[in-house]
Image 1 (cartoon, rainbow, N blue to C red):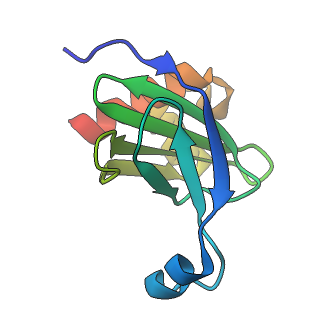
Image 2 (cartoon, rainbow, N blue to C red):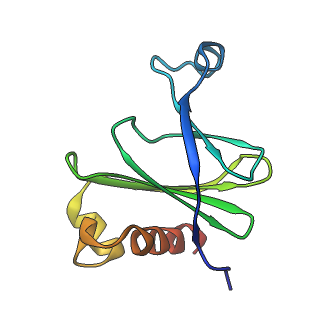
Length: 122
């Protein structure tokens, strides 16, 4: 059984130009730094997304929600080395409701993260 998800304090910044160029991105990615963790996590989330970050055992869970564009995504990272364990992304409201339940984006951030994480783990 997984340990309890706890909200994490964090900060974000844009990746360096060198990193952006190496990755072949036209726009810089958002880099997440979680308090108490040395690794940095390069996110797929957009800069206008609302982020909620949880720590669960040795994992960092990053929920990104954009109500204006109607999408949600969850990325799970290994807290030690920053590698991505898995991700889920839904832009279609019907698919999201089939996945998380009939309330779709209207669930709490913790509920969305838990249900999307269960998809990734299973």
